[in-house]
Length: 275
Image (tube, rainbow, N blue to C red; front, side, top):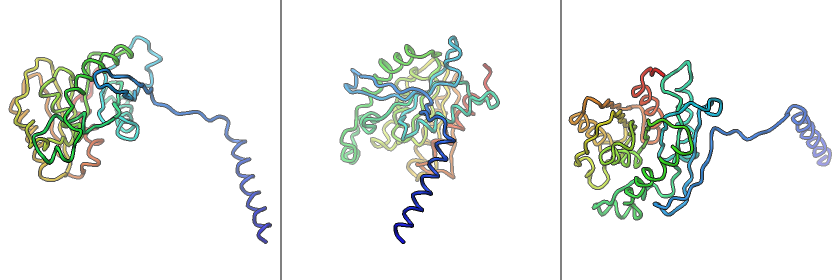
């Protein structure tokens, strides 16, 4: 009886696989861009970059594209999701934003790269490798952006997306090195870091146009308050050449606020853009 059952089972599986082999013509890898491995002298380590290229990038050899730099940009973090929003938003029948290149920066140690030195003992205990964001910012400025501009056809328009500790870093760049980017999308920033010292810092002056979008979900009193204080601080200092937006996502949490925030940010920053 057992032998008969095994023979029947074998026939079922062999028939199924045989049918599949007659239908399946070809199997290929599916890619949405490129992966770069680079050696950073500033960071003294190898870094992976994930690059999303617009569908027509290879068909039009003269067209140049703005670049969106994504912190936490590995495939198992936010790269695929954000690239999907960029692709959808740049469809000709949507026109929420122009076709853009996305550069996802994979993490090695985000606690080290996204934080500046903290005087708070609990920060030091919980984040023992922290405090090297100045190095990471120099890497972005001196190595990463020049490499992307040299390797791909880019315009001079650059956007930075950062969430959580990435939002802390994006805020620091906006305050201290604002000309590195034109657009800042800051989601659920960890402004509690170092006893909220960054919020007490005076941003430096800038002359170029800026678009700044800040968002936070229902994430507790500290996260919600500090995100709102960041918005109020920037609103008080707001210049004529700055577009500033804030969104409280009351149905989202720290874990799922990023994607809807980025979608809304693109809609606000670009509106219905004209090519």
